[in-house]
Length: 431
Ligand code: S3P
Image 1: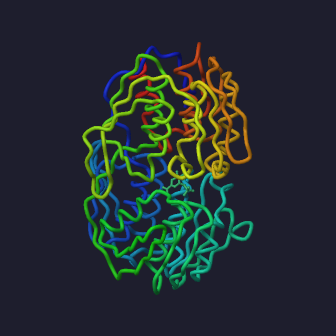
Image 2: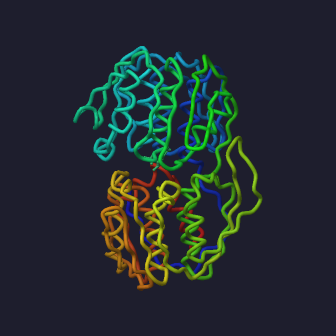
Image 3: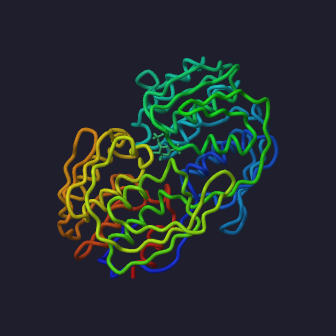
């Protein structure tokens, strides 16, 4: 695929939708496969990450059908909690940490052997955060560095429920343990240091799985079975984020983004941008299944720098690359702390975003657990690298819309892991 080339924009205009939510699509495929009966998923994200999750369940004997037309729902014929069969090949989850970690939770409690792996980036990401608590539940999992690095070999076992306090706020860890808890004997009780995205909890409730939520504590009594259902997936706020920031920082913009998920565990970016002076109106609020949704109306505004508290980090976690672009365009200093998790994403995002935005003239400094950005410098087009990270590549393309001259982002093919059609949509609205 050729690199993305972007020039300064004269304003973003129009009404758009963004593809379906990645986190919710993964969960719909996983829970639809474990449910008894048919689940249909409309508005699902047909990106590489989610298609890999679907392929993994097909290898375990689940029929997952795509309609012929774009926009047709995904139809999953679930075989019940213990209906998966031993996969005849290694399950390759590509670039997706969510898929690999959540599947490890599902596989740990099966009565068969399986192996999971991913691409070069995923094979460098830490897995002990799920493997350790799964081992406490009785799982037998092997891998390099005592199970920290994929490929992982999972010898399915009968699991037991545990009480566990998560050391990091991570929806992937929480969800892997809840999925393992579905197959365990006895109750699984989890506590998080700060709330992370709660799509798994909402989908459990929607499917009638008995999960109690008490402040920071979750308690799951494993059901013997649950039934498939219709799921409608909202647009992904983490994809909308690139357009929200683009419309805010490029003068003369007015953009409407329809059907965006606004789950409060995900909306850190909206709150932080508003604190910086952005104008983002939420209209037509409604619910898709258990998930709140709205249309967003965004107009360009001058921003000012802010200090971001560690409490805001989990609610903003995937949006820091694009937030750095907003901060580079704001007057004054923005400081992000308590965000060391960014170092173990698809790339070390503290390093990659500071390195690449510096090439465009931004004053951005790496901190061990975050970034310091002194905004207000004019950005200039440059040749930048995406570092095999979809969100870094998209953030740099947006920065290019506000920079003088031409910006080239190499490695744009990674964008397909979460946002097929990004380049076309960006060019359509950015004039
Ligand atoms: C996700 C959780 C987050 C997020 C990732 C998707 C999920 O990861 O960064 O893009 O779908 O559960 P962590 O759980 O590692 O914070």
